[in-house]
Length: 199
Image 1 (cartoon, rainbow, N blue to C red):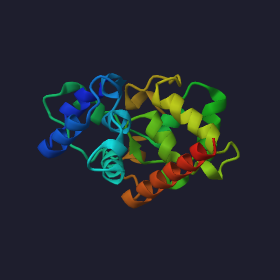
Image 2: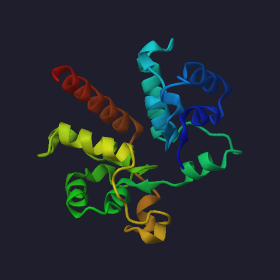
Image 3: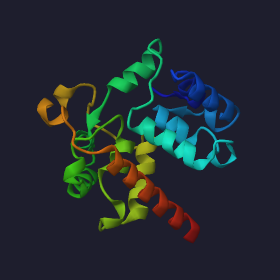
Image 4: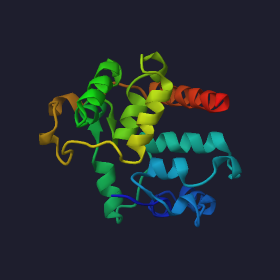
């Protein structure tokens, strides 16, 4: 379900936000590359620091997209399918084919986040645990997250709930607050900025 970032931008229902995304899009650059979700398109579809709205504004919009709080046009069947295909963080981790990586993901998973619904493995890795509190460290998880972002982690069949572990009851009421998720997103982002400065 990958498509160019510009197409994700065009599928946003809110007229004002859609216009801002399209106006900032780097048509001949990053916005032309295929992305698997609106959050990914926003994350890398244009340079936030060059946009008139600024980095903080786009970070908050990206966070809303990760949480599924940006409505997409109903006429866009791919976007609608993307919106519907949500699994718990635990289910995404259990769907990883590589035994060693799957074990590391599940061992580091924070219990309070295990039932959070997310739309892709990248987001599950990003939100599933505090990278800096693991034995593998931030750099390791940054590289794994990047592999997940580009679809380079092989998964078991994730097309239906029936093929994944976990009961349907588990995913009905995820008990993770929006504030907790955004706080983790911002902390990970701060750590990555610090690491990149050191490199």
